[in-house]
Image (cartoon, rainbow, N blue to C red; front, top):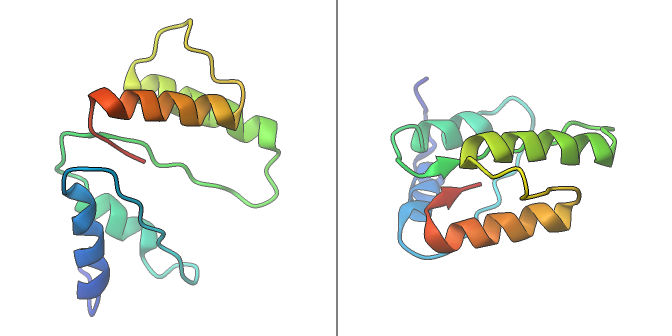
Amino acid sequence: MEFFDREYELAEVKELEKPGSRMLVLYGKRRVGKTAIIKKEFSDTKAKKLYFFVPRNEKINNLIKYYAELTRAELGLKEYEKIESFSDLIKILFEYSKRYKIIV
Protein backbone atom coordinates (compact mmCIF):
# COMPACT_ATOMS: atom_id res chain seq x y z
CA MET A 1 0.00 0.00 0.00
CA GLU A 2 1.30 3.44 -0.86
CA PHE A 3 0.65 6.34 1.49
CA PHE A 4 -0.04 9.86 0.28
CA ASP A 5 0.40 12.91 2.48
CA ARG A 6 1.13 10.82 5.61
CA GLU A 7 4.73 11.89 6.24
CA TYR A 8 3.95 13.30 9.69
CA GLU A 9 2.22 10.10 10.85
CA LEU A 10 4.97 7.86 9.44
CA ALA A 11 7.64 9.97 11.18
CA GLU A 12 5.80 9.75 14.51
CA VAL A 13 5.49 5.99 14.24
CA LYS A 14 9.20 5.73 13.35
CA GLU A 15 10.00 7.43 16.68
CA LEU A 16 8.72 4.31 18.46
CA GLU A 17 11.76 2.38 17.25
CA LYS A 18 14.18 4.49 19.28
CA PRO A 19 15.50 2.97 22.52
CA GLY A 20 13.41 3.40 25.63
CA SER A 21 9.71 3.26 26.35
CA ARG A 22 7.33 5.23 24.17
CA MET A 23 3.63 5.46 23.54
CA LEU A 24 1.77 6.75 20.53
CA VAL A 25 -1.99 6.99 20.27
CA LEU A 26 -3.11 6.87 16.66
CA TYR A 27 -6.75 7.75 16.12
CA GLY A 28 -9.00 8.91 13.35
CA LYS A 29 -11.98 8.07 11.24
CA ARG A 30 -12.60 4.54 10.07
CA ARG A 31 -10.93 3.23 6.93
CA VAL A 32 -8.20 5.91 6.64
CA GLY A 33 -5.18 3.61 7.08
CA LYS A 34 -4.26 3.78 10.78
CA THR A 35 -3.63 0.06 11.10
CA ALA A 36 -1.88 -0.08 7.71
CA ILE A 37 0.60 2.59 8.84
CA ILE A 38 1.47 0.66 11.99
CA LYS A 39 1.77 -2.70 10.24
CA LYS A 40 3.88 -1.24 7.41
CA GLU A 41 6.26 0.55 9.71
CA PHE A 42 6.94 -2.46 11.90
CA SER A 43 6.86 -5.22 9.30
CA ASP A 44 10.67 -5.48 9.21
CA THR A 45 11.44 -5.12 12.92
CA LYS A 46 12.80 -8.04 14.89
CA ALA A 47 10.85 -7.00 17.98
CA LYS A 48 7.89 -9.06 19.08
CA LYS A 49 4.67 -7.41 17.93
CA LEU A 50 1.19 -7.56 19.41
CA TYR A 51 -1.76 -5.91 17.70
CA PHE A 52 -4.82 -5.68 19.93
CA PHE A 53 -7.96 -4.79 18.02
CA VAL A 54 -10.91 -3.72 20.17
CA PRO A 55 -14.20 -4.56 18.47
CA ARG A 56 -17.27 -2.63 19.49
CA ASN A 57 -19.63 -4.18 21.99
CA GLU A 58 -17.32 -7.12 22.72
CA LYS A 59 -17.59 -8.57 26.20
CA ILE A 60 -14.55 -7.90 28.36
CA ASN A 61 -14.08 -11.59 29.25
CA ASN A 62 -13.90 -12.47 25.56
CA LEU A 63 -11.32 -9.74 24.96
CA ILE A 64 -9.13 -10.90 27.82
CA LYS A 65 -9.30 -14.49 26.56
CA TYR A 66 -8.45 -13.43 23.00
CA TYR A 67 -5.61 -11.09 24.06
CA ALA A 68 -4.22 -13.80 26.35
CA GLU A 69 -4.07 -16.27 23.44
CA LEU A 70 -2.37 -13.70 21.18
CA THR A 71 0.13 -12.76 23.87
CA ARG A 72 0.88 -16.37 24.77
CA ALA A 73 1.51 -17.29 21.14
CA GLU A 74 3.65 -14.26 20.21
CA LEU A 75 5.76 -14.11 23.37
CA GLY A 76 6.00 -17.85 23.96
CA LEU A 77 4.68 -17.64 27.51
CA LYS A 78 4.83 -20.59 29.85
CA GLU A 79 1.64 -22.33 31.00
CA TYR A 80 2.03 -21.05 34.55
CA GLU A 81 1.99 -17.42 33.32
CA LYS A 82 -1.73 -16.81 33.69
CA ILE A 83 -3.59 -13.97 32.00
CA GLU A 84 -7.04 -13.72 33.52
CA SER A 85 -7.45 -9.94 33.65
CA PHE A 86 -6.18 -6.78 31.98
CA SER A 87 -4.02 -6.25 35.04
CA ASP A 88 -2.34 -9.63 34.45
CA LEU A 89 -1.82 -8.76 30.80
CA ILE A 90 -0.20 -5.40 31.58
CA LYS A 91 2.08 -6.95 34.21
CA ILE A 92 3.27 -9.62 31.80
CA LEU A 93 3.87 -7.08 29.03
CA PHE A 94 5.88 -4.83 31.37
CA GLU A 95 7.95 -7.76 32.67
CA TYR A 96 8.61 -9.01 29.15
CA SER A 97 9.60 -5.52 27.98
CA LYS A 98 12.34 -5.35 30.62
CA ARG A 99 14.19 -8.13 28.81
CA TYR A 100 13.08 -7.84 25.18
CA LYS A 101 11.89 -5.27 22.71
CA ILE A 102 8.15 -5.44 22.25
CA ILE A 103 5.72 -3.35 20.24
CA VAL A 104 2.11 -3.37 21.38
